[in-house]
Image (cartoon, rainbow, N blue to C red; front, top):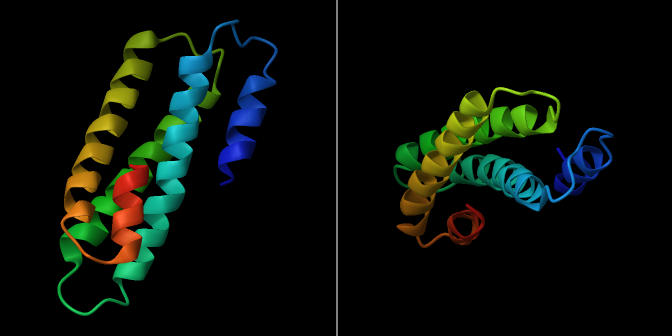
Amino acid sequence: MSVKHAVDVTRAHPDLPEGSDALTECLRACAACVVSCAGCADACLSEEGDMTECIRSCTACAAICTATVRVLSQVGYADNDVTYAQVRASKLAAQRCQEICSSHDDEHCKTCAEIC
């Protein structure tokens, strides 16, 4: 998933209301988190030591943020309660992932923590 592509496609949606900067910023952040978490989880597989918690956190965060990108990309979807709940879930997953990744010294974990 290209972060730029996800945002560009959504910005081009004919029903996107003006002033939707928060939506596109959230979409961009979630898409970046997906890419970062997937890469971090993969890199953790090559690390020595037990990286299980980090891999699980990154994998869960990537899955939750992927779902959020899909929901936010549906500009015409009108159930704000569901959309807000999904965004809150992404924020929580990203915060947890950030906590776990920032506890490691590996460069990929530091980068993932920064992006999340």
